[in-house]
Length: 511
Image (cartoon, rainbow, N blue to C red; front, side, top):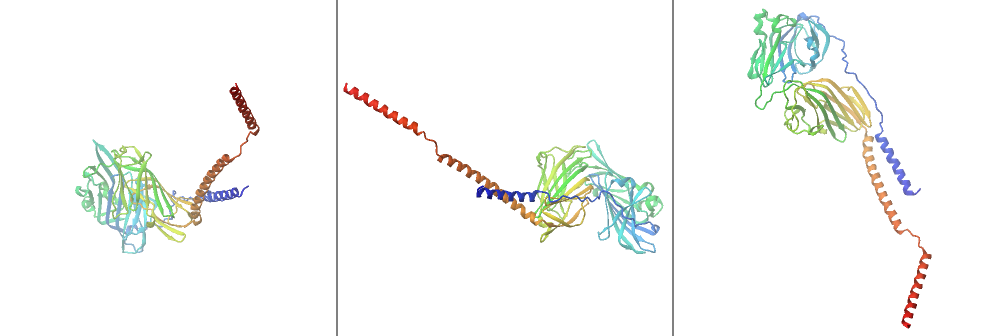
């Protein structure tokens, strides 16, 4: 074996060794955190002393969305007339609507989050929620809290001769197991295009797209200046129905009830300075009208937005200018090079964009931390079955994480965190912070392997060229067999022939 061949074999061995180290899975593990099962903590709230808790200054703010979502904010002032402090209160929603509740939260007076849990207590056909104060409410003192809830499937849509009518039915004021008095007001805000508003016993303000329900207007009718627990003394005024028509104008078109049936988002993070978001969305028109466009909100830092489907790039995409919010509106005009979304039809598309690395990542040697809202894309309508995968390339280990994922997968130097949600509402956020250690050896090995691979290919090419050239030169310079005997015979016969020609010529001259 020649020295050159020996060197080539050694080089090939090391190249194969590096490739095996790089591409063979180091280990694969799944860590399932079963968050699909609701684990109710031990209930510490109770109704003891409920008769001495008075709720005053109720202010209900309800936004009726054109896509069928109802967002309710109840601002309550809680007065403790007991001789002992209390640490929580209850608030209820109709048991029939419990399955339609997709989001709930509570805030303190400073917008600080309060612990809120489903109590599994049912009272008077209402499911009760326990809201815990950030500090005990002392006797003869008061606290202001806000309870937020988002409900789906509370709105009905009707197509009457090409015009869309929308109807909402619900409970006018908050459901409380306590006596309520003072200023009790509920404002229901309608979409921009609402007209022909009918709000029952409430006062409609068409110019403000608002229906206002004031308890003071029905005090004489019910014969009391307070509301009993669970609104018992409101009688028929407890339930309301709001009907309105949606009109076009000023660049507006009639909106259809859209719903995201499925959303799969991948957030790819590389220590080389790359954050890329890829999302596949399946949207369906559940309304009675045709939809000519789809709107979604992407994070304000998004760059290089690209929208496509199985047919290729989707044209007619516009991205709104930066505002004070954290998002920009991305509008897909389907009439540009796609077809309108008919009732009961679906459309699947992809959205891709990049995020600036420096806005989300902080480094400390081989350790990096990323803080990001996983809901980089949000919709104005209900979202179902959302899966988010955070892919961290070159990750050796996860050191800390603020919210545990449903699954963790580690393979080939990459860590994948999977988060799943059954329902997503426009108000939700999923801010997490992940601290991880970089697999420095793996990151350095990759360019080395690619360099060696390119060098190996180039060396093989040069070797093949040189081998072919050498074979050609050898073939040109190679000695061939020469038939000496035959040549001698030929020369002898040629000389005899010439001699005969000379003799014949001499004879002719003598004659």
